[in-house]
Image (cartoon, rainbow, N blue to C red; front, side, top):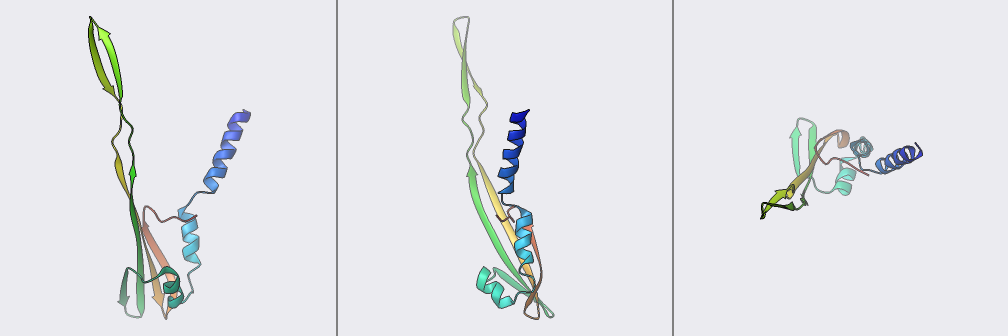
Length: 125
């Protein structure tokens, strides 16, 4: 019972330090009310901008790709009736994983009014 409780405590501590979407949202919330100039000074030149009436939309994009290395197969040999038979068991191929996030800030009267984001890598520590 003690080992199970210790395992759960360690798992909770590990997960508490992980990057999350909630932490990313908290960072974005801190930009609401900031000036457009402050945003650009911190985040840099946006990847795209769009204006609609008195609104301006500044979009920032992040993307990367990583290789998840597979595992090699295991070769199992058996001898039957004096013959050796070898079978390949398991193994997985390498995979390329794409991570991306697009964050768009809505600017009105040169102030950040709100934000939106989408993607599978919109996280922060």
